[in-house]
Image 1 (tube, rainbow, N blue to C red):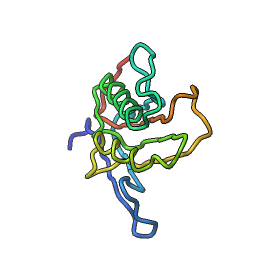
Image 2 (image 1 turned 90 degrees about the vertical axis):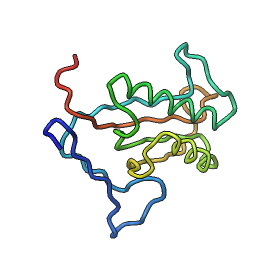
Image 3 (image 1 turned 180 degrees about the vertical axis):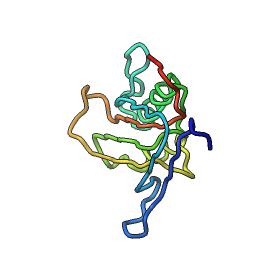
Image 4 (image 1 turned 60 degrees about the vertical axis):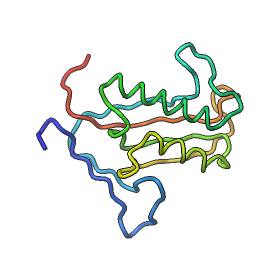
Length: 141
């Protein structure tokens, strides 16, 4: 590993509960950190995708995160932390299935899931934010 590449360790200490589908700890000692704001199911023209359909909305959220990461030269393999916000936790199985279409399931990121009363628009059912770590890229300003 060169100095320009991130050093990342995904692990689950035996002293805390073993999770399903995410890592309890992600340790980063090198690299460039990219924060992606919460993404809802809006397309590039700010139109809602999948009104009333949780799976379609979740897929659009992850697709928006993918596109945001790509704008920084990164992908889901670089994601170290996901924040997931849902208006109904009953959709957890669907959310996990969609998430697993995008993340590296062999090295799943740390994750937090929160049920909220509402998102910024009442027709939005899910929001996804991400933190990713990639190779040092120098100044991108």
